[in-house]
Image (cartoon, rainbow, N blue to C red; front, side, top):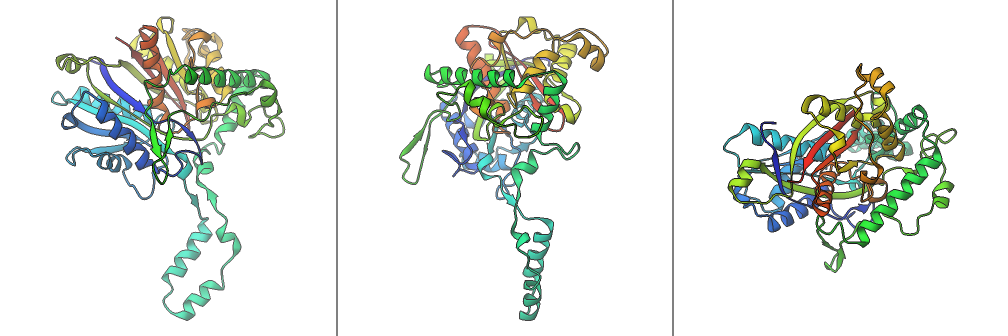
Length: 430
């Protein structure tokens, strides 16, 4: 990029497990809440926002172009346009990098809002094709005789729903649930069940330590909910106190029940949440006298085999190194989204494997070894949850706040993407 992008400010909601604290809020309401709060605490005037870009996967039927609905419900001026972007699990990063590209292309632009949202609680159940056809016939029947004729064809099976969440988490090309792709990596890289359980336990312990020490307070807003607005939600409810290795070991494999090793305990939690940031060019931030939270230095996206979609971070970081000069040895904080314990562990191995690089990239210039002390310092999606459209933005926020706390300089935020892709963002604190 011709110059760095300043991430001036950012906020996220608490993340709440599906069906719990935020389940009553649709995606547009969640996104509007965080955007409204962000504009109240931001040093950027709403009138200087050129566009709102929001990442979302399961776009709600009632809110076509959910970004526009979010912007209007948040009270932004109606003349500010808004667009929804979708790159599966990287949607919250896609919004940031799309905003960055537009800011760099438009010399007159002042600032953008980017973010991500997902209400996984409200992903709908669907009727089968046969059920939909029957309901269409019933709706189209005009006479009593026609209606009775359609009703005579009714079958109870028409009411059996297809679970939208499961369909969304199943790759339509390789026809695998995301968890099965994690099983593929566990086998390919010889990652044991015990090692996955230990990784999951550490994620919970780190997230609990971060919560109890107040480390998330700088990035998180409080939510006032309930019929009488009497309930305050100000923490993530995914991290489990008292989680033990013994309890994790008792869980049965979920995706491959006969020979698998991946369980619900070593998988990301299904969660609701929203996050947003304000961005402008570094030169614009300096001209306005602003002190940004941090900067986006460079980014890369890459594709890989959908059967091994969890290796997306390795492919994306390899491209980031090759095209922008990124050097893992200079990094102080590494955030790899914890879609699955096996998936993160596979990337840690692959990034430092000469044989893997020679096979996949035709060279042996490995990315390098990730210091465990720098990886997901505050826990990850196994404990905190993975609201699909939000997670990319959340990773960026968490990484930048950690750099600020530690007075460090460089971070890597990366994640795998359903369908066989990876995203990687090179972040700097100052």
